Length: 471
Ligand SMILES: NC(=O)C1=CN([C@@H]2O[C@H](COP(=O)(O)OP(=O)(O)OC[C@H]3O[C@@H](n4cnc5c(N)ncnc54)[C@H](O)[C@@H]3O)[C@@H](O)[C@H]2O)C=CC1
Ligand SMILES: O=C(O)[C@H]1O[C@H](OP(=O)(O)OP(=O)(O)OC[C@H]2O[C@@H](n3ccc(=O)[nH]c3=O)[C@H](O)[C@@H]2O)[C@H](O)[C@@H](O)[C@@H]1O
View (cartoon, rainbow, N blue to C red):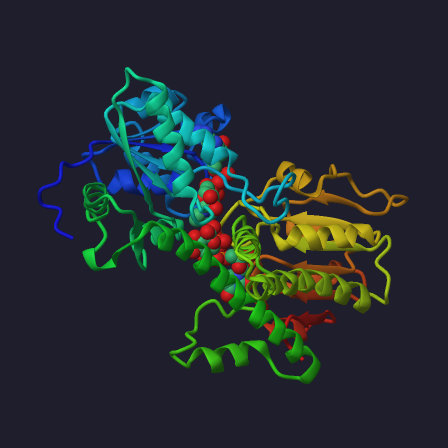
């Protein structure tokens, strides 16, 4: 697209300072020094945390993020509570707010709750001045842009004095947590959906500051919205597919890593996203598939809905079956047994625990009376308490179904019956198994749900090793 004639956008506002808004705007600001970027949020504590001088206290842990923040914060990147002024001053507003699954009302447990998107659109309608480009960055159901357009339009008709105009674009985000900075700097593609050519050109011109033109795809707005849901559904489907095969490996003596390598070398299949695991977590895969299921049902496509719903049921089964394997190997009962969980975030290199498989597995083990010791290099005791909905409690020999947090792994494993590796943190790849084995209760077990342990290092100890997807 030829953008040579467009007026360059100089002020951008982003509504939502979360896992997407924060890192995305930090990279955008660092690549576009002439654009002033202001990130706002209704959560005042979050904005305060983004402004914290101690970069270890940023609300999002993402490798490389602290360096970028230290370079651009206060120069052309600002985190602010002043939503009104930030919108008023901006020619372009990104909506990057949460769109979780509804938990009540029509469509509960399937549809996305769009109340935050709606409130964002209302804020823009109220405070914008002049022509404002509104860009959906949140993942939304197809046709959400219509809702945003209606809200923006109605604000004009209800306020005769205002002479604002709006155009709405979709530009979904494809970053993955833990690799967000690299994903934002070198994306496979950037997607822009819309019908207002002038606005599309302006957004293209921003991205072209660092992204090659050929990677910027322009589609109609509904294709853009649907592509985001589809991308996540396909990625999640690969994980459920490989996890289903891992279960067959365990029964037959095949090895999932070998199978993944064998099928992944077929270029039509590709070698990425074929790691078996305790199941996919994160705030989006399940939510976005449920959204697709809801959409399919809405349009009477029951077969399509069932097809995608099975990706989630396999994922749920994976977490359950791992919990069952643990109980089974520990002589059918874990009541009062000390089990160490290594990893609570849903994947390595993030402090995010949303929908982490560790949550369901921990809950299953607690229900069965285990005494859990939980370790994670980036997740705090408080986050785990919230996720498990149960306060931590020092081990009491008379109480079952309790857990506590332990920073020191060697301390955690003392007298433990089992260790379960749930997140593939680098810290867990090079543990001293000889030392660990000495302080565990015998017979001791290690359950490796990520396939990260070197079997030879365990073989020289008395530990029994169970590896996911290995017969
Ligand atoms: N987390 C991820 O890796 C990815 C998320 N997404 C999508 O991006 C969207 C945002 O996700 P996250 O950043 O993870 O959510 P988040 O929950 O971390 O952040 C959303 C923020 O928006 C704020 N907010 C809500 N309503 C607001 C309003 N009216 N004005 C200003 N701020 C408001 C919330 O207080 C919250 O801090 C979701 O739709 C998600 O599906 C897309 C790609 C990757
Ligand atoms: O919309 C979103 O939120 C994002 O969702 C995912 O990103 P994310 O959830 O951050 O992380 P992934 O790397 O996709 O991992 C998701 C889950 O799948 C698991 N996984 C991933 C890859 C794999 O081979 N096996 C596997 O079990 C991970 O451990 C994790 O629990 C997508 O990869 C992003 O493109 C998308 O933007």
